[in-house]
Image (tube, rainbow, N blue to C red; front, side, top):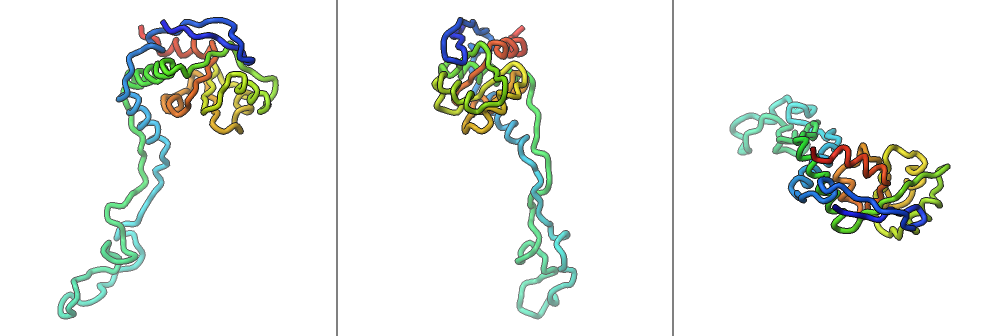
Length: 209
């Protein structure tokens, strides 16, 4: 069972936490993580790209020249895809790129991502993090105390508006909460900074029965 120190926002150790083996020491499936990341990125695409087919391009209704006797190739329309300013053959049209994958695969990918962070020693557990008011300077101080010099994801149990507002202007720092974190975010950031309560929340959802 993985055991990590619990730190306060001053960077001092204030306790220990035992992590659930089925969530933070699970078998790693790179295939599942890859599939979930591809699904996430596909869902972010707007899919609003559009080109005109030959029937949608304005003009071209008249045959440009007679069929035979000119010495030139046959042509029925100046909007043929072969012509400049003509239509586009098999061009993109608005579509939804989202697709679904099995729930068990999504859960396996999340366990794999969390386990990877633990094995790489890139998880920092905090007893709590909260600010009375949005203060970027205070967040910078907390990150300095935790010796964070790379991209980091801060995860709380529930949405913390002051934490989010304090971190949003800091390059490489993102804030999320236990109910909405995803595999892409975990893999995108080098460090995972998570509160004790968020750990319990995640274990409630992803612990194997």
